[in-house]
Image (cartoon, rainbow, N blue to C red):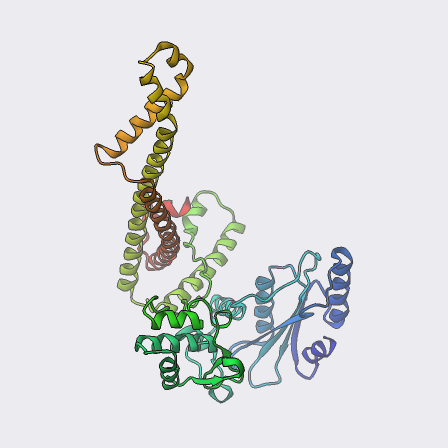
Length: 449
């Protein structure tokens, strides 16, 4: 760790330096001190995993000074670590472009946790860096070239296109393609796999593995490796016509981020807000405008009419899904009430049958008044729900309730996604309207709320 820090602090390269909760000259010792305290307080090994993390951030030649780049690097580190981890920023000027080396401790300063890289953390960090650069009116990468002889995808490919498929996903797609050609048997299926460019390898004991171009180690043909629906038994079931072809699971995109409406500063100031609030609101609006611009670029909505149309469509879809959820919930409630009434009716019917056999005896009625009341209530509920229709069997009701519950769950998933899309589009369009001077007084009041 000290060797890494010494490289960042090399005076021949260093143009500016800043730090948070540590001294760059002794950062390696301070980082380890926090780790030792963490280990003593939690009885967990602090040396497991990474001791620290490094972020590199570069700027085009002549766009910023060393001090400005260092300030941006400090802001990036602070927002990335949320002020919970020690870090220092070294700005180098020895290359043709100014760049930052940001080092931060993997253990929180309050010894409460360790930083863990998560799936898509690189993408999230790049998005944060882009947003901060936009907030400072700096350029971001939009259409970069491939590097490392074209073997690796650059950030521009993350923004402008799909990330390269993993070997597992390539094999899954090849399996789907081979099965759509309706192979006669497993041997025919393997031949068709080879025609897609996948090498089929046979091992001891009949073990089959697949190797795609560029892959070093073959992937075993089994469910535990390739996932549900892609094992030998699953493929054989599709060949025999006993199961449909399974498609690879959709790949997750980046986590959605929130874009909020701009604040009408003039309206707020008329209501008595002070200068401190005005300064904060200006910074806040700058960040939201950067977020809105980033959203518009990523979604290709630089035309206002297209933005307005998409916002309206997202709003309509949200309300449509809300109506469908209400309908599904009403039907589910109706089926559940009918099933409960049927159960109560079945439990209390023998009591009513005994009441009839006793020729509606007052003594019998007094002894079983509660059961008979439940019987009458269940019968009335069934009559009200069925409306003269024939009572379905309990198995049919159970299946209908299961289907309605599954539909409700699926609708809620779509509903949450539609709500998120609608809120984001409405916020972006509201920001654009505000900048174009289209924001009217009622909307200002709505924003103030």
